[in-house]
Image (cartoon, rainbow, N blue to C red):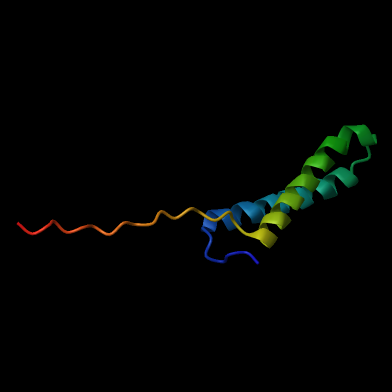
Length: 77
């Protein structure tokens, strides 16, 4: 399940990828030209949709968090 605390731009990018991919798939399949003219667009659109669905399922890559070291107090004089 995806982490819902991910940055807003990540979800915006995924939604945009999905919508553009679906739109390109519909446009490619409704094109009356020969199949070799719209096949690259169809493959790119399928990869965009697959990319968006994969990252919705997996979620964003976790960031490595550095362990913060405690500040050591100075030794007594």
